[in-house]
Image 1 (tube, helix red, strand yellow):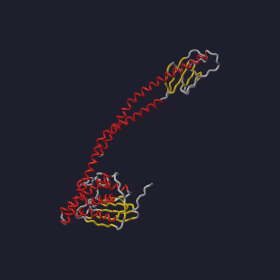
Image 2 (cartoon, rainbow, N blue to C red):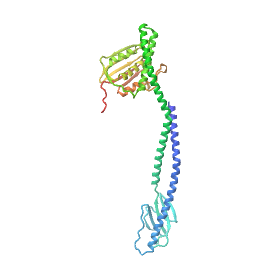
Image 3 (tube, one colour):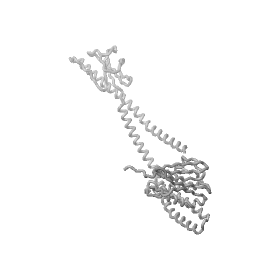
Image 4 (cartoon, helix red, strand yellow):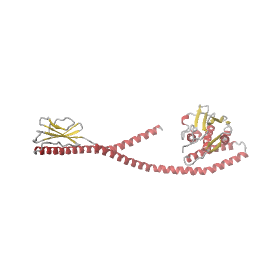
Length: 389
């Protein structure tokens, strides 16, 4: 089981890596291209802005105006330097020493240095600066990632849905087949049991008839488990007032042929007039599965004890056997788990019991010693749990 999970995890990781590779390669080329385009646009904008400032300086130098307003911008900064590199006027936030005409890039800023013609400020260098910002690129990349992830998700969803459709269809066919097969089995099982009861009345203590009836009772328990399993979450099991004491005697009597076939004695300590508000079908699944397992895993000529009593706010049901015990208690309620594959069964009986108990807040306690039997304790709350309106 661990090996299958490991293989499945490797397959998922491989698919994710392939998906990341498919998305990242074109995204890498897109980002590289956009960075180059962004740098080209920044240079072009710097040149235009520098030419604009230079034209303003030349215009002012050839005019009679006395005050010059250096152009301000939210995107650009500017500065004037003399031929020795000394600052004449500066709006720069970072110190800069002009050297040659052209572009430079330092600490996230683009610089453009232009050499001016003669002007009234005796300025030789005009430096303009623009900060490198990739906000638009980041937004575009995020949009691409979101759209790509959505498209990939939809594609995977569609592919998985199409690939699992045959399995869903097979599951529906199998479920319908099981329903039809169980419907067809119900009547023959009843007829066989009726005729075996008639034969046992004619041929009392006949070993062959007794064994046939006990085997049929086992089949009926398995059939009822399968029926309950198939109809789970589809059929409502109404609750009613049940004489818990009489119901326990009734279920013990149902397994009388199985008990006699293995010469197992049942010692019952069942309190009188104990009433329970519960579903008869669900209660029968709890008792029948526990009793049938106790009989199945008990040796011949041993004893099974069934106790029912009230304690505080609970009705306590205990079913103990003198069988081989349980090797792994933590797994007995798992679906399809069987403690002994030779003894048969589908491994769903105790799983059904656990689900019913969890649904109705029934406490389960299992005590077992290998080679000395097992004891199942069920604590049924006396008062039904109220659900909020």
